[in-house]
Length: 72
Image: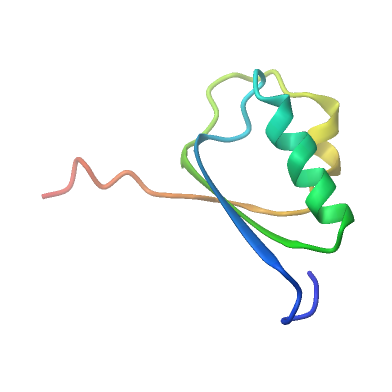
């Protein structure tokens, strides 16, 4: 995305994207506009099929953390 010496921010969220949390999308878009590298981590995949149109402007990719609670 950006050069290696650019600032970097990571978000770890319970679920992303989430329809009810537009503030986080606005914050991510603002950081991206400022040339800050963003790493997005989500503990769960979204279950609601409704998404805000502004999500299509987010360039950062989401890494979904696998649920290993069922493995022994």
